[in-house]
Amino acid sequence: MRDIKDLKVLIDRDSLNKRIIELALEINNFYGTEKPLTLICILRGAVMFYTELAKHLKMPVKMEFVTLSSYGNSEKSSGKIKAVNLAIPDLENQNALIVEDIIDTGLTLDFLLKFIKTNCKVRDVKLVVLFNKKCARKFDIEPDFAAFDVDDKFIVGFGLDYNGFYRNLDYVGYFNL
Ligand code: IMP
Ligand code: MG
Image 1 (cartoon, rainbow, N blue to C red):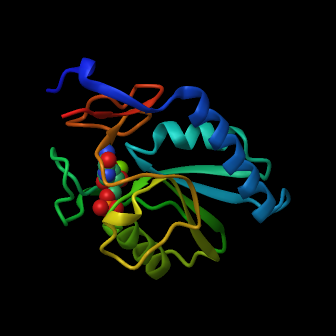
Image 2: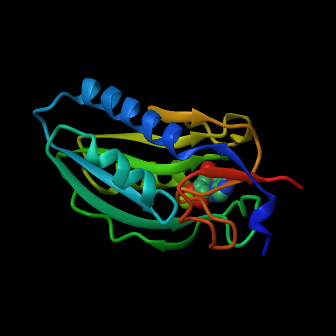
Image 3: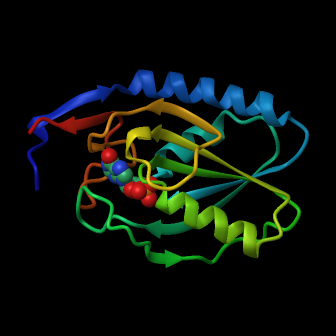
C-alpha cells in the first residue's frame, strides 16, 4: 500500500469534468441525436468516466457493462486477459461505443473489440477512452475518441486503481517514487 501523501495531482477534478463535456460534444456531433447508441462500460476502471460521459450524451442511450481485467495487482500489464465476465448484452444491429478508462498495451480493447465483432452482429462498434498511453502500445489498435494523452507513467484515481484502491478519487494522480 502506498502513501496517499506521495500522490501528485496530474489532472484535477475541474479539468477532468471540462474535458469530458468537450468529448461528449464531439461524440454528439459524430453520432447525431436521433439514433440510439449502446454504451459498454468496462468494469471496473471505466465506471467514473462512463457515468460522467453518459450524462452529457444527447442521443437515446442504453447502458451496458462487461468485466475484463489484464493487470492483476501490478503496475505492468500481465499480457493476459483475466476474470472475464463476458455476459455481453444483445448488440444485434446496434451502434455500440465501448467506454474504457485507459488504453495501454491495447490488449484489453483488442480482445473485446474482436470478441464483439465476431460474436455480436453489431452494426458498428467504436472505442472511447479517458486516457491514451500511446507510447505503451503493443497491439495495432487506436481509440476513436480520447480525452487525454498520457506518458508511460502509472496513474490512479477517477476509476483507475492501484491494487484495487484509489478508484474513488475525483482527480487523477501519480506516485512520486
Ligand atoms: P491494456 O490491456 O494493456 O491496454 O491495459 C488496459 C488496462 O490496464 C486498463 O483497463 C487499466 O485497468 C489498466 N491500466 C493501464 N495503465 C494503467 C495505469 O496507469 N493506471 C491504472 N490502471 C492502468
Ligand atoms: Mg480497466
